[in-house]
Length: 89
Ligand SMILES: [Zn+2]
Image (tube, rainbow, N blue to C red):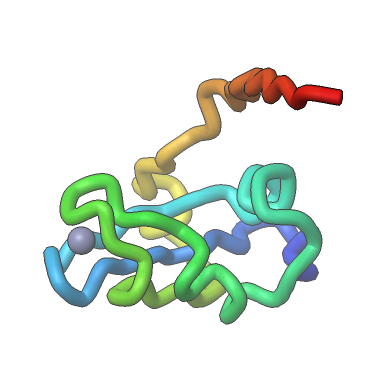
């Protein structure tokens, strides 16, 4: 994802729930790595239907009023779950 330009936003849609959310490309990169936007299909999970297969993601360039009014879904926290697995010698 190369979206360093100001004004570029990632539009992520769930076709099943008909929900649209706007993300900051840099934050998606932090979570999913430096992958093309298309790679988020099947990776991101819809928070409503919990599915990954209906996700559509694209980069948009918003201008003017749209760019000012867009409400982002921001990265709040990344949690790492520690799992301990024991094995017998
Ligand atoms: Zn959904």
